[in-house]
Image (cartoon, rainbow, N blue to C red; front, top):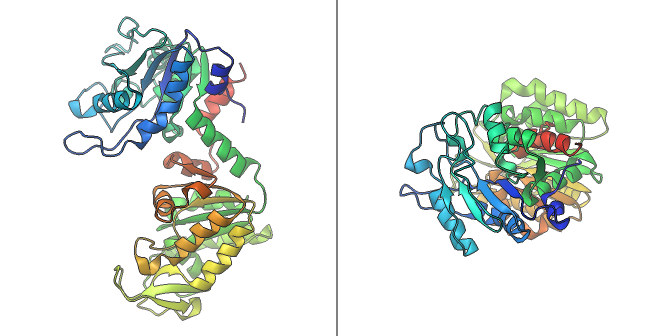
Length: 405
């Protein structure tokens, strides 16, 4: 994928003295008193900001925070705590500018005064009327504030909003910041030109929420490992009994279609041959390892069995590329974590390029301490899932288009 990298612009000395508008993802969690409880996203935004400042730019940064009502400011919607934390981390003042777009939708050039080497934060961009709907007049006014637009918020890359898409249309130059560029590179490596075999792990409670992902991957991957409630539905489709396990019987036809699509290409959806069951969904429920053919009517399947885990681990170790989205069992309960732990360790030991994303997946990666062994960890959430569905993200599309001009 061809796009302009902000890093390259800095290296080519094309940023000095320019007004740079960075769309970051600073949507951090806060407690009831408004204190930031976890600042990973702020820390992750700093390399791009430092890069712009070091290159001699006049830097503006903005983000959404929470879900404010457009045009209606409330103190809880303010980026003030974010600006304060960023100032601490950078060791410099980060003035917060409110009302940088007036009520008529005009970017207030007189308000946003920033000199080369300076950094200002522009108040919550979702307070601006027309932001969510990507209003053209708002996007043009935002673009008028800068010489270079930098998109560095992958978590918003699947949304076409004024501060993520519209501004990229109308800014003199539109580029990808280091965070977004890394995501674009990793996704391209994993899905557009993967080293084979390509193995995808798609797990979770419901087939319905990931059906389009499964269908999209079925036409591309060599192995499609399913886990959690999704695996139960596939087990049903394969004619196995699953007791009272979580499943979606009304989607058996879709599951069978995925199995057949894979089979037609000489690929497969490995169905568990053994499982770990319990009579109740509790951490202290007695766990039983059973053959997949021996599940009783009052059993809950809460993990894949050790035999299945070993077989899948061997496939992962032999893979060329691995895409991981979702744990394969209830890994939060010690008695039902073996499958997810074996999968995680196999990915860590594999020489494959691996890309992982999704909240539960990130929690599993952290639990088993394999952060350094995963090729790329995506923090995009919804954006990552849309990529797996085969969609072209709006941010990718507009940045690629602007790179042509």
